[in-house]
Length: 159
Image 1 (tube, rainbow, N blue to C red):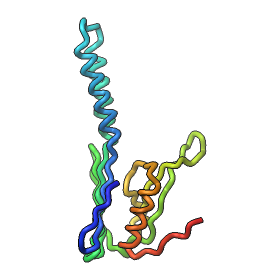
Image 2: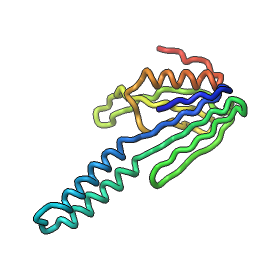
Image 3: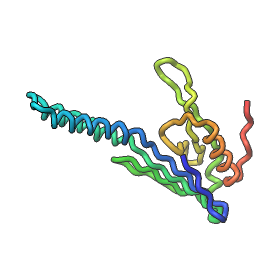
Image 4: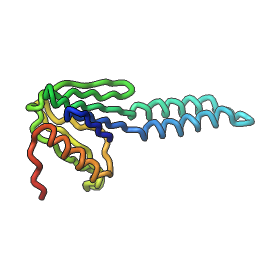
């Protein structure tokens, strides 16, 4: 997650989920390796297609989110792009009533992990800055506190 500050006090947060691209690249390399195997074996073409399709599916998890907090216009403009989907919106600062750090939850074990993400609580519902979770709690706290300052929200009560 990257936080850029402009001279007028406006802030832009960019969140990129890069690991699906890495996984996709590994599967693409595996597909090439199967295709170039010497001597070719029966079924290599099918395995190449299957592995290449898995690589494309992994790219579906690639995400780039951009949240621009314009302090002059007092508006939040956001976009989130994935391979097959794009969403976004615009809200006045008054439409954001809280910011929280959400912890991920493992449904199988019933435990919370240390991975977190920043969520905006708005009149339009919950808007996460990223659909993925990160282990960098200190950085996420710094970003969320800066956003609280820009939006004019009080600091949360820490329990």
